[in-house]
Image (cartoon, rainbow, N blue to C red):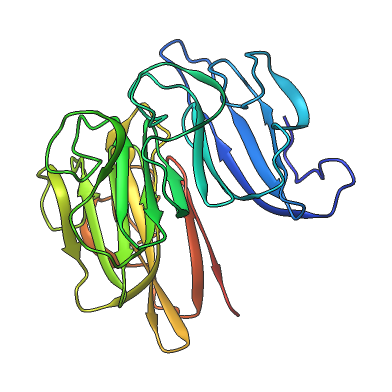
Length: 298
């Protein structure tokens, strides 16, 4: 373990990185990471129990190892024990598949990147605990995998083994899949959330489960949202988002708050978006199980 940032190798051409992992019922972690280089190659390392490194093996590796030979990777997202990425507009997933999160109509683990069913051209993807949501080039939103709490937003609580469309709108610009809930932003900065809501993480002022997207924070223009999710304790789940007003940005959080992860000066859950302090200038936010990090211009 390292308590300070440590550079990985000597390469200086990394363009994006995603970290995943979970703690199983026996308390054993299965952490891993994947990253894309500016050359369009994909690299993964860490635990590989479920094939989540995409290396056609289940043996862990402790240095970045190239995944396949493709040089067209543009994005990667890591979940609890699976990952997905976009290569040349095609969406591929690998790793644990027991809830259908690979998206190829079965529930088998995949040791190498496997194309999701239905094809199409994809622009962004977000892997949650055991579900995936992604946006196509026509700005339609699709989700699949675990759905026990309605986290797919498709109007039911039935798992989906192939990409399933969320509503009929063609104006989705961003999506964030979490543990038992998900959120997304539509054109114009409209924010929607859905799924498990035990601690108010949907943000609609209730603790009722929502199986379809519910608009929240209608008075604001939202530019980025992040949903937590790699936990065996879904009641910890929380969401944070940046609301834009001209060139400034305010930070808002809601949901579980047992260790102060909302940053609102208490450990009381919030059922609706609650502003973090009074500062503006927030640009982006990231959330983990019970932590939040954000960037603000000084």
